[in-house]
Amino acid sequence: MITELHTERLHLRKMKESDSSGLFNIWSDPDVTKFMNISPFTDKAQAVAMIHLLDDLSRENKAIRFSIIEKNSNQIIGSCGFNSLDYDHYRAEIGYDLAQSHWGRGFASESIRAMLEHGYSILKMNRIEAKVDPDNVNSIKLLEKLGFTCEGTLRQYERVEGTFKDIHMYSKLSSD
Image 1 (cartoon, rainbow, N blue to C red):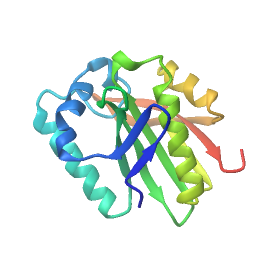
Image 2: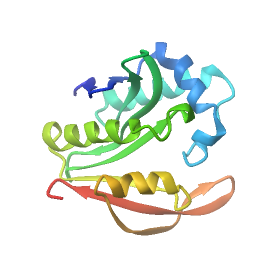
Image 3: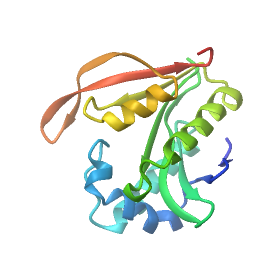
Image 4: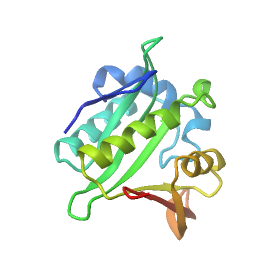
């Protein structure tokens, strides 16, 4: 499995433990984690544990997560990846997060485009999915801009802080 992707402004590299400080800064921001399935981190050890968990999934070929590094500053500005890889059915689910200081500058769409290209051309996926909280308007706009189709609502799909939440299912096929 590939461990690096490059775009004009970004270097996407498989996460490693030394990324924990930069990722902790992002994952401890309540505005960033608001629509993620995690609570804001309060200790750098949580970022280290998350990186180890993702590394285990990557070794099992079930997922891969990249740190998003801005080439100009060499700073970690987010993460993206395939939260699940299903080679039997040629589908994957993407996920992404970005430091609030980098919102609205096209970094998310640039990194997701690289992920889509990799998913279709290298991993030979037919379908790439994204599950999105209906209140995450910015993520929905991003997915629609990138040609994803909303397939519907997964009713009470996730339990968040004791409450069941609906989730929108988006997908993009290799033929789209």
